[in-house]
Image (cartoon, rainbow, N blue to C red; front, side, top):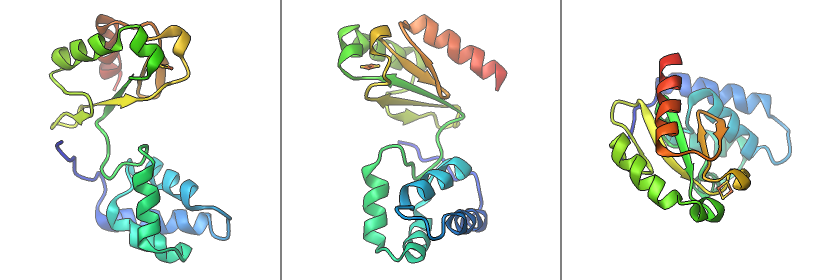
Length: 164
Ligand code: FES
């Protein structure tokens, strides 16, 4: 998978991490909120920041690395400008998401789980969006859409791309 460059310089990443760590100082169980805040601001949790986070929270680097790698939501590099998540769980499978996945992979020219090299789009699997009654479900740039087919997904992408 092509790795996109970080959107921020290393010094900016470190400054953001220090601000976030200071904002959560003394909070019990702060690791996950800290990682979420860093990702909200940088688009990712750059691996270079893990030693700083570990030191600040008096944790080992291995512990922090273990948490970051356990939760799939945390990214080492930022996603594409548009993020299309296609549900692969049971209800969506029963409504033909396997075929929809293959059709979208071919129409987008992008395999599921990959990001375009130009950074325009990430196409990602997700395992239930809580919208099972309206399967198959997608989430495009944080917005949920149900009972979609390939044409609708392409139209949504074009619409959102035009707004971007
Ligand atoms: S299985 Fe796809 S939304 Fe629940």
